[in-house]
Image (cartoon, rainbow over all chains, first blue to last red; front, top):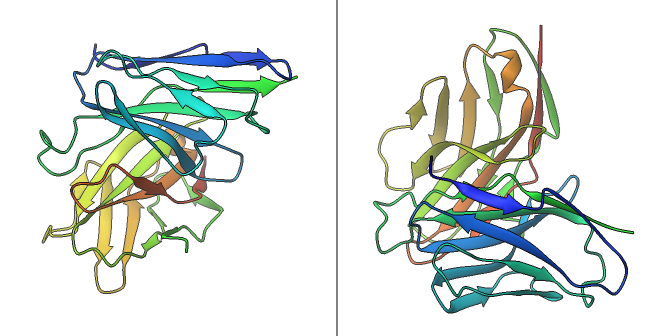
Length: 117
Length: 115
């Protein structure tokens, strides 16, 4: 079955450590996204990528970094510069505007919950 | 300025009854898309229904329908014949324009279906 796989599901980080969240999709989607979700809030965009080797900052990119070396993969690194990284992180993908019939629906992974100790 | 507003933090509905979850939006772009997602306690976001700004008919998908009132800038989700499995968080989202990759999400409504 096609879908998005995020790992790990739960992750604990010590202060000052960088951690990387994995996101892999086998949907042949062009675009991929990382969102952060905090309790009582909606999703906020961290980074997105429309094509391989290209990505743009979202609304809350500070303290995060990404790469898009392969179409299927869009890992997110939470760096020590991120002051409040405890949150639920969701990866998503979409077919992309160029191939979309209009809706360009986001498909999400199951999420990764990061806790800073 | 908040562009997606969900004013109901929590809602209760009796099993088998219908329920409406409110969503209002704000945009000056004539081309936009509106989405509803369900987030069960497991955390994954599940796509429910989509409405394009130029769509003449209200969208429907099984027990879900979207009450789209363009002039009022509202896109309410109607769930008919509620089931216990419908208990979850529900998010309204908007994508402005066709060339953008930014989706704006509301703060969500927590729905609890009562047996």
